[in-house]
Structures are given as structure tokens and as C-alpha cells.
Length: 222
Image (cartoon, rainbow, N blue to C red):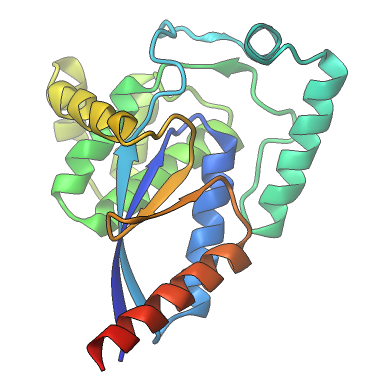
């Protein structure tokens, strides 16, 4: 019997480890096809809610926030790129130039979620690629609208949302909700509202956790 799971994936589109975590989770779910069925819901988390729309130079940001030297930043970027390659996510070779405000991206993701999990997943992956692979700004309306269109969403409706403040209150409410649960770093993966896996884990970690939960679910039915 197939075990069904609800998975809340709390993350930010500017977070490279979130891209790795999502790719890893998808690999695990593919390995468990037939044993596990999961519906993903992407929940908002802003790494830099006060970041201006124009963003900040990534080296300056890393130095200020993490006290990383330029050499440490290069090493971290190379390590992330290698981890991404292992799970099939391509990071831009030059790395990120700037870090941006992602609130509008989260508003569009919330909208996509009202239209179905598949649409939201497609938009999430498109936004991660736009920023982390293609080096485009997730604060730029044309980038967001283009990602929405590629995800099968109505670009005119996406533009309308971005021109106003639709879904702003909902995004802030969801952020506060997960922060109140103790989520202060991402990715944070919550399974069936009870089980937490943090970080961009390898596929094997997700596979083992989901298989164990599926086994427990089956045992509870017997």
C-alpha cells in the first residue's frame, strides 16, 4: 500500500542549499515511487527581508553576514556547485553576483500554490534556476513573469499580482507561523506537520526517513 505524505518545504529562492535540498528530495521520491506518494507545499522564508529591491553585492554581503574571506567564499561556492552536480542541479559557474529581496517571488509562489501543487513546484524550480543557474534577479518583475509563464501560469495575472500587494498578508502570515514553530534556517522540510528534516541533505537521508515513516504508517494500520 502506498503511503501518502504532505511535505511542507520551507525555503527561499535565493538559498543554494534549498535548491540542493529540493533536488535531493525529488531524487528520494523517485526512488520510492510506488511506496510513497507526496504532495509538496512550498512555504515562504526570507533570508534577507530587509534587502532592498536592487540587492547587494554578494561578496560584501557574505563578508558582513558570515565574516567569510574571499578565499572562503570561493571554496564554499565550489563545494555548493559540486553538491548541486551530484543531485542534478546546475549552479552558475561564476557564482552569484548579488543577493536580492525575494518577497515578490514568494507572493507569486503563494498564488501558484492556490492553483495546485504541480504548478507551484514548476514555478519554484523555475525561480531557483533563474537566480542560481542563470544569474537573473528574483526581484525583477520580467524575470518573475517569465518564470510564471514557463511554469504554465498566466503571465498577465502574474503581472497584475506584482503590480499590487496581493498575497502579501498571506506570505507574512505563513512566515510568522513557521518562525513560531522554531524554523530559523532553511531548507526546513516538515512531513505531515510532525517530522522535521533540516538542511540540504543527500537523497539517502530523505529516502531513509520517508521509508521509515511509511513503515510506521503501515504498522499503525495493521
